[in-house]
Amino acid sequence: MATVDKNFREIAVRHGVELEAVRPLDHTERLEQLARVLEKRDVPFPIAPDIARDYYRRAAERLPFGVGTLTGQTVDLGPYEDFQHYDQYTLEEHLSWACLVADQQRTKHRYACREYLEGEQMFAIGEQVIPEYYLLNAQIYQQTGWQLATVSEIIPAELFFTCHSHRFFPVTTFMRELEQDYLQEPDIGHDIAGHVATFTIPAVAGVMKNHGDARDQIYSERDTLLARARDDQERARIQAWADELLLYAGRIYWFTVEFGLVMQDGEVRDFGAGILSSPGETVFSIDSPESNRILINPSDDGDLLRLAITDYLISEFQKTYFVMSSFSELASLTCERIVLAAKRAQKMMHYTWREIAPGDRVLQVGRVMVSPDDKYWRLLADCPLDECLTRAALRNLRLASQPNFDRNAGDSWLKNPMPQIPTTVIEEFQRREARGEFEQETLPMHWDFEACHRG
Image (cartoon, rainbow, N blue to C red; front, side, top):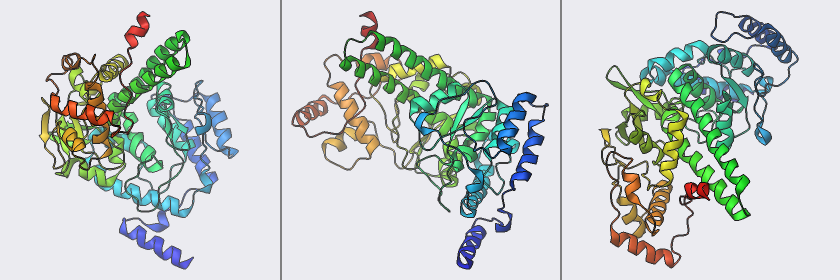
């Protein structure tokens, strides 16, 4: 035990954390804190007394926190539902939170936008122990109208955005290992220390809700088509069509809510939760010469489409960041515009996270930048490609090989035409594709939804 304590103390010192302060309140102290919060009336969304009493009772009985119960709404999480058993967190897990948050606070106060920092102050995110969800959920609801929904792991996009449509935000209950900066999957350090402050930025919270509504619209159209489907093959195509639309809508979410940047006082500042939950990427997103930074206006349909047709990976720091001039531009991102951009993206060739497109307003050309044609030449020359470049190259070449592909339709939605794939490249790809050289699955080709509607 002495060795463990010594290791913990050394880790705490490296991150500027007082190990003695990493002590969660006991159950009685937490209940006293919760009672004071539930009584508040000078908040945007006060909790009704009868609901507050039942909520307090559940916490007092040590029932594990699951789906929030502060409104008449709930959400079915199915097999992904999980529960926070707060008293089961270990000192190591609390210390992991304390060290991560201490690192985050140093980078956030240097690189985050004002609105994000003001939001964090409402919820004491910088404290030394993992937040208890009973207390945090009540505080979030009172300030924003949103609630937490505890899940066990990354959940499917359809369920993720279903939660958003009811103003529930899915949060995990596990904490990453000590001194782990970047994590591919969401944990408490991402979901809470990254996202919670963004709920207080009206434009960002609006985009989150509108993505939930976009999911509802997409799957409502899917259900209408499924009711008219003639066989299993057609039903599978309809499902693939809806899933693809949600994928492209999700890219808009990724480049705004998760990895968005905004201009403030003439400087680039972070607000995306995916960035700010990683101290390393927070610095990287603004200071690193590696990545591209592109100024974009989401209120412009062409710029919004640029997000929907840009592929990315989640396994490492981003290769392109999109920067907005102000949050007012993000406020224009309605459900209808999200769905329209996704439907247009289905019919178009796509860019990757390393590329600068014609007409981009470039703030910085990163060292990892490649031209839109590079992925095709590298693919045919059997040169190394990351998964994002490979996926986009195969999708675009297969789409361009279809006899009925109309590239002019996509170009008409953008400010500048997409670069033309050389005919020789397409012909060489078709020859090698016929020989079965390219087996990687790509995104499904556009299915003619309009024709099905007419049928």
